[in-house]
Length: 327
Image 1 (spheres, rainbow, N blue to C red):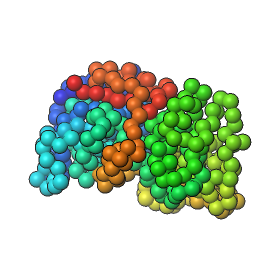
Image 2 (image 1 turned 120 degrees about the horizontal axis):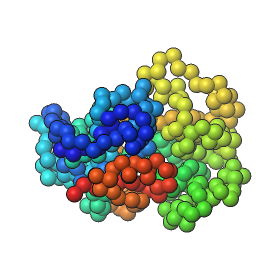
Image 3 (image 1 turned 90 degrees about the vertical axis):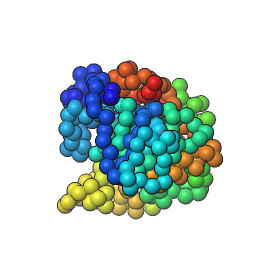
Image 4 (image 1 turned 60 degrees about the horizontal axis):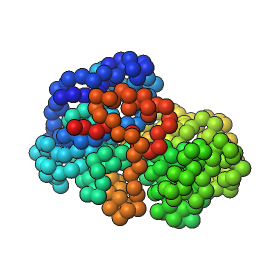
């Protein structure tokens, strides 16, 4: 089968190659998916660059990609709730990475049936961003009437998180560039902050929650704009001590500058390292069927143009998801 593979660490043009490789075999709890579409995510090109070698060791060449939609071609003896021919989607586990290909083998516990009212391309774009948003926001107890800032509202995670938070009854601030202001408003954000014209810290203050998708100084600045007792939920910064323990980082302590900020605001800080979940994808499917969440796609590429697709994603200009569609 054809597969886009990481052949060496480095630049995208040098580190990726479209190769012929063996079709995956399945275990008793696996589903073999004939792939119709795969979504690209920043973690993919970070893997190519070698920045995640310690967290995600790879045996090269390794097929790239985590988000997938397609049709069940085979299933293992212990698989229940699915039949051959079912249309499904998933965020595959780390050890089953490889969705930018013609087939992928996936543990059935992380798979959900594709909503009937969206395409394979739209379904492929949902798993990672949806699971990330839900896990990060639920972990800090997002609730009705919360005032929340979601950074980077035009990105994949941001565009999903805005819709999810609005459906929870929150008042949503978000940041984006001038060209995307009206587009992000259409997703449901209550106050869109054009970061090219406004300082978000002067617009959003005394917040219940900041969803930090950017890391760096943005994480530290979040503590300036939350209320006393507010919450910061990050997917791009340092681990909190609970998360570090879950990640096997024994003896880890939160950096002092974070500890001081947390203490000053009596704040709750969490870093979420997203985990695949078929059960939560079922919840996303229900929201999509009920028209509470709509997938957002920027561009669709063919498999043979996969490297170009990653180069585009790496520019940071995508509005929503970048998708690889299979013939």
